[in-house]
Length: 100
Image (cartoon, rainbow, N blue to C red; front, side, top):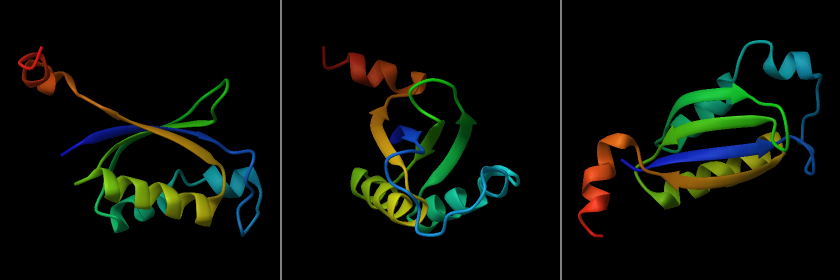
């Protein structure tokens, strides 16, 4: 399955249901995890980050369309701005290199 990394900025688009940061992250990311799973994806890792982005997620989806739908749903439900890219894990590098 294709892998993706999404970098999330929590500013720029406020969620429909605002709350405190402690409420939002105190229990981890169950809402984000469920939203990704509801779109057929798997959230492998999620990190709070410092710098231009606030969160980095490592995910896997059946298709790019499913990933895009999940990211749109996440923006609608939770707010924020995402930048998502497809990535290739080391286990796929040999297949990628065959086309060079």
